[in-house]
View 1 (cartoon, rainbow, N blue to C red):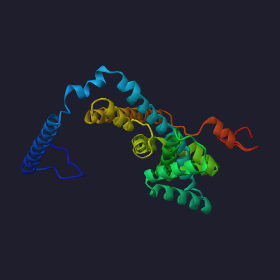
View 2: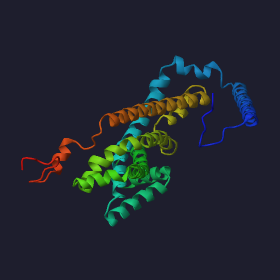
View 3: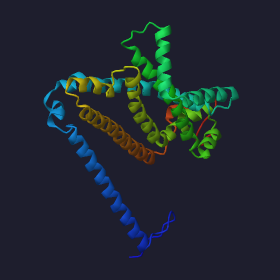
Length: 304
């Protein structure tokens, strides 16, 4: 059977295939040796003893007292940050596409400023500001600081995602909207944004994953009782099982982020199928809004 040519790279020859196979075998051997060394090191320090791992299977208090409350706080902070950051990011992203220079300049300054500052510094500044200028209780202040830092940073990142998603659409979409008399706000609301959602969805979900992981910064620096912060008290109460605690927390983070990406993949496929099955991008109510008094949008009336 004749091999199909590729435009991305040359098909490797016999020597190249043998060399690639050798490199693969050497890498697998080195990886197996590294894993074996790690396992032996953990075994020598008694980190693989059943007593270190048993609490996660035999004692429900490890979940009800430490892991599940930490996971709940992580989800609360991430959800609040995403719900607030997404509309703010869309607003600033659309603002950077405005025809008015002062709107573009203002939105661009805000986006570039907060995108250039590490999210941890934003959390620390927010915590200090809440402590100095508000009467928020010390128990809930870390949550406010974490959410504020996440919102300021991720809204600026999402603004660029929204702007890139809109600019990625063919210019003919805007031209067609202008041709039927749509104003720029209507074009953005009824034509550009609905079509760009599918293109932006992978980037939006990847940013949501980043938000979930960045909540751990609040636990490390502000005492926010999120999932990773549960390792220290849990390890102190169950015989210094630090490795086991970190492993379980890592598995929970992986499972949570995998669930998010899986849901996003299914949603993206569903949106793409809906986009193929229905070519309309402007609803009937939008057309009614476009029609001015005495004007008719659609086929000409032959009775006139």
